[in-house]
Length: 396
Ligand code: PLP
Image (cartoon, rainbow, N blue to C red):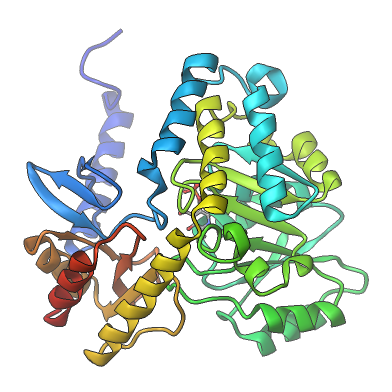
């Protein structure tokens, strides 16, 4: 084998030139992405380059990444089942820990069945692959997460996008399908970069008029809303309008993974032709056991979601008082829209100087000219940390 890495010869040269060009362009436009190794200290503190920061950049809304019973359950299962699952679920990667976690997820969500995958990104793909039958057409809210957009685009199915939460345009799309064409609507309950909610009552009214299937991504609603943290649809008493729920277990549940929740038949379909599920190694049993323990904590410690929502209301009120335009609601995701990429990066750096970690979110993750600081709260943030955050944002 030759030395010097894979970018060799003429092919390596043009590839390298193109990569450098593209990276320089992104850098000049303040769009270059860099990773920084971060050492977590606890649910709300991290260390970077030897310095301690309060972390407002994690989706650990309930502080469960560091909950002793979640860690213990994962450790015990790791010791029992091994570090990895060794194969895809249909080969030999599906254990009793997986089955038990799926049953716990299904009970928690109040559905017939659930399937656990290694990530929410994969779950989105598996859902769309399962639904891509018989010339079906997908309709998506414009602010749907990249995992959903990629899944629909990658499926090759027909799709349309409606403006964010715009029910009139959404209804117009529902009405212009071909005769007999089946339609699937995909939206999020709590939007990941905006922290606002879908108009589930409006969608419920349309569902009485049009025969569509509804997929609801509860990545950011699960754990925070509803009895036992079952999600935003549960909180609104509208779980029944949802045909397929997507849950991520990496956010409020503090572990990793994506779950697809719905009817027994839907889950059986996913296991049979959801390629993103079939052709990937199963999530480790340690994670499955951690997830089951996290769901138990959500039932047993309701104070966690009550506190994070109380903090969300407090921070929103304070920021509004300070002249910031902040969306209504009490989700722990609070964006401060600043416009240009540069302004968002400067704001994040300003907070860094005050030992606060919050991330600048830039296009293409969000639309152009809406770069923002995304503040994410946890029930484990102390009152002092919240004061410090509000104070630091005053001069952003
Ligand atoms: N859906 C939404 C709304 C998300 O915010 C995310 C996570 O970023 C995902 C899906 C993907 O989940 P995961 O990180 O588990 O792949």
